[in-house]
Image (tube, one colour):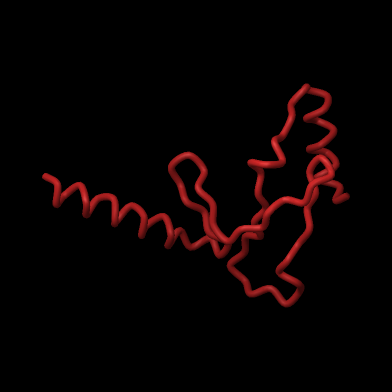
Length: 86
């Protein structure tokens, strides 16, 4: 297990926090093209986490290339519908 993941795991146990492996996802974020394998296997509670290219956290959509293009497109569509409704 990666050192940082181990620290997160230890802190969560010490603070009696539990992560839900069914709701958790993994995403590699980088502006750069990766030469290494883009598929990673991250386990939580002995279950592999689903790897995604974009995810929504509260009101922001994050994409793996950190461009926020998905977020801007989502907001544009939402505001366009609102304008036509008005």
